[in-house]
Image 1 (cartoon, one colour):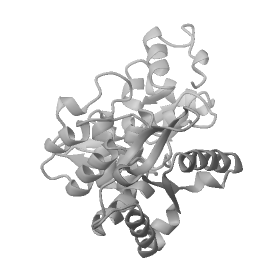
Image 2: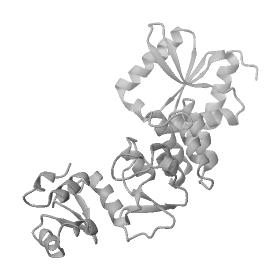
Image 3: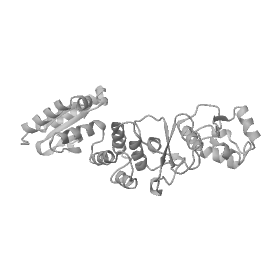
Image 4: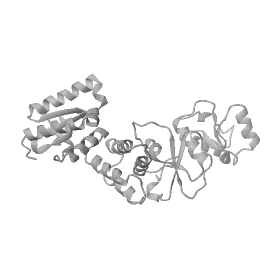
Amino acid sequence: MAQWRRALPGEYADELSLLLFRQEEVISLRQALRHLTRKAIRHRVDTRRWRQVHRAVFVAHSGPVSVDQLHWIAVLAAGPAAMLGGLTAAQAGGLRGFPSRPVHLLLPATCRRSPLPSGVLAHRTARLPEEDVLAVGQPRRTTLARSVVDAAQWANSDDEARAVIAAGFQQRLIGGDEVRQVVSRLPRVRRRRLILGTADDAAGGAHSLAELGFLGLVRRAGLPEPTRQMVRYDSTGRRRYLDAYFEEWQVHVEIDGGQHLDPRQAWADMRRQNALWVDGDRVLRFPSWAVRSHPDEVVAQLRAALRAAGWAG
């Protein structure tokens, strides 16, 4: 939280102190003029008690601007109808693993937009039902499901769109039919098929971009559909989550991401693999880069393992 302690009742009106506290020490010119004269505002800027960060937006301190304050600056600069949207709103709701800039805003298609600070992108929508707007929290933002859908349709690539959706499910921020319900309210959503297909796969357990890519390889090759993130208990009684498991043939596939460069993580995965081998499973491991760069080799090894286990396809 910014230095809100400077906003004491003896310095400002109580209403102004409360407003600054609620808005992370960020205030618009229009809001400030309800409590102060233009001369008083200019005095605060000249004495560095306030700092002008946009043509009509101020922060009530002279220090660094936080991420939360950037969100307020963006919303207040864009006007009263603006709200956080897309990846920015999803991150405000807890989504991790993606860059925090630029700040994405969502505005009704019919509203006028004021000039924006650098690093802020405004998107317009003709469909913003009440179900897609978070009822609590400030600044205003879209719900997690709507935020993830918007982030996917605004993404720079299909892979980025898939990654955002998969992360929402993997981090347990969204689930079930939430994505499908949002898409049903947006008849002109971009990447509709990709969003719905990725959400279905993620809900079924494919929680990373590499796992989604592997699942696509399996389908294109005409191989049996695996169970994703299946719970198994090894010979020691410990619970294990399998990336992809062809249960009828006891073939288990593990997709190794960048985390496997950590020796402790690698050893933990080896122990899990060894325990599964002890129980009789065939275990195949593929690095995520191989799924992308050498799909034919991945499919050939998987097909050979399934046939050796009795698959007649």
